[in-house]
Length: 117
Image (cartoon, rainbow, N blue to C red; front, side):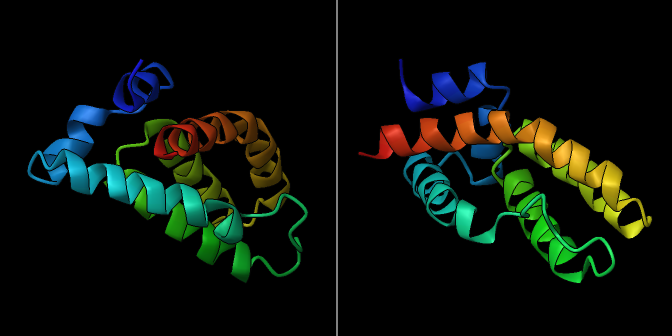
């Protein structure tokens, strides 16, 4: 199964991501690889400081934007909600959602990394 087929099975809108890049599969694949390579360094740690969510908000915003541009729908939708919760002063709800999306985002990142080798 190809990278694109696997990502579709995980809920990504590959056609939308490719369309956004003018159908350039090489560029799309390269950007997916960069996203996977940098994801964990820029990930929102569920143990963030609930009293000062500034860093968590910045990281969630960056992940949301990149996942949206690449049409990694499950990550985009979750981080959109996480960002709203953080900005709305609901850090514990954001933390719960981070823990819920973690297995899905790990599957997507692992899928990309496996296919980049």
